[in-house]
Length: 96
Image (tube, rainbow, N blue to C red; front, side, top):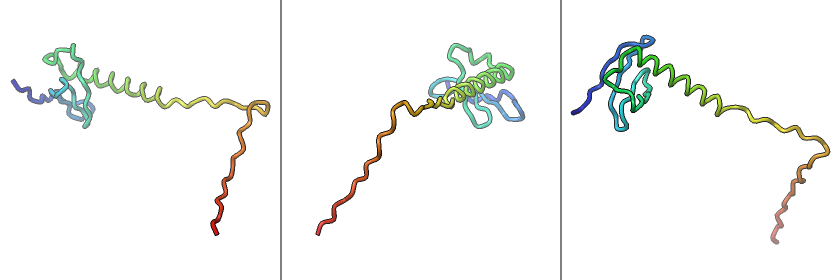
């Protein structure tokens, strides 16, 4: 039995669909796909549940991106610590 895309309604004036793909059910909203958890029965998916799922997925994505982009702490170096090794210049010999 093939499952057809089902229009759930509009969220923020953009259509929201539930689809069945290769890896299970997913929502499509604003040209982006969001996986529906395997344990959730897709027959019970409605507009309210879809909007809460989209909100949750977006929040988790923002948190993940914020953790990924945290600036690294720069270590302060004093004059007493190791100094950088001097750069060596390599000169090429001219063949005569």
